[in-house]
Length: 231
Image 1 (cartoon, rainbow, N blue to C red):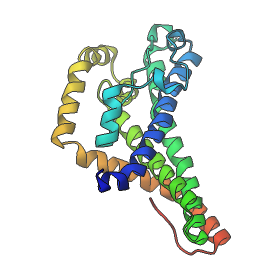
Image 2 (image 1 turned 45 degrees about the vertical axis):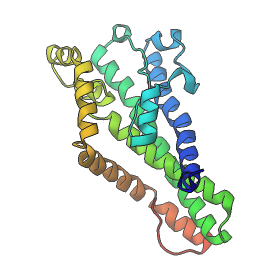
Image 3 (image 1 turned 90 degrees about the vertical axis):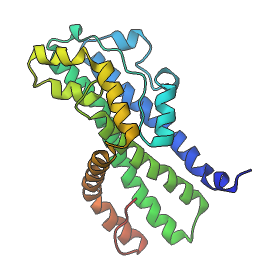
Image 4 (image 1 turned 180 degrees about the vertical axis):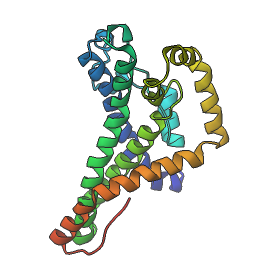
């Protein structure tokens, strides 16, 4: 068996485990917020759940594992149930990326504590694998959050951005979301979006690292290790 594959196997397992958690949470957040705003569509179709089998898109998951960017099956939403359809669409759309950013924030806190504990334990295998899992929790959630905030259909960002567009322009753009999606996929394959996505992801990570900096000082005081850590 390929030795390189065996060496990288823990990383693939960690990424798969993270996908089993962060994608269902992302989609559940859409469904839950939409339900709270009065739309029962996702609930009736069995999407108001954390069961990953209800949310996974095979091609999107393979893309996430291979390219680091992917997607799930869109949660069905009927804006006719909302008092203000455009505002409701924006709020329910924002719930998914915000859930990823929150998971990345919490995971970064836990990772920093694990890092310092690992450093002072003399190299615990258990802490190493937990740290590896948390690294992917941070990076994959950041990637999912940023990717879904792109302001073009069918991504969540288009629903958020659409809240400030005139109705005619908003619904006109949404008519072509399938073609726009194919265009975005082509740009991804060609690498055109690599730099903008990297800059956005790095900017978000920098912000989360700054917000969690007190954890560095606290962990350093507890474990007696100076400095700060980053993934």
